[in-house]
Image (cartoon, rainbow, N blue to C red; front, side, top):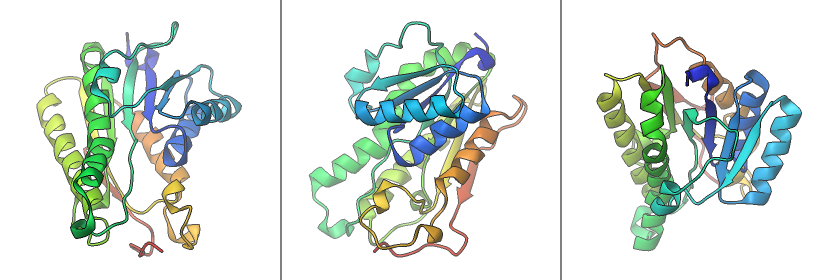
Length: 239
């Protein structure tokens, strides 16, 4: 199977940034889409929006990507090509000082922000290696690059994700599998639903989606290893 014949898998596709990414790919490519998240109802809503945007083939996978065994046994729907592009977008933000964070909360941040990507890559990497080219995009954070006093467990988990992404890139650069880290600043999503912050202060998720579509369309001779996306006026304090 070639890269152009393969599908695009997006985790955390049921809402927010993942939904925007899914819709953008639906409008930009004829490749099949695989939408993965835990909430089946929301996934089906995203599927409908993708079809309205022009997607030829969309399938949903209701699965908890933090569950290693569930991901190992995950079966693709009949008639859907294996993914040649993985977009590991699933994540969770905890607005809490690290000194006030319980071990359980810390573990949850690591599970969602790190192991969803690890489990997804482990499930599909054998097939990715067999293609003429393939691409893994991990949605990291500017919190991967610095400590955050108001969300330390989140920053710690995203540091781990960036370290994993860089290590994966180093390991796979002798193959046809590309690996990209997106260090994303504060982006308008469901994480901000209870905030009084104006969306105009935050990154537009549609802009993020446009960048990912471009990255996935580069020739096999080129790879963006890492990119930082920030709000125009810099970081804002959560409210």
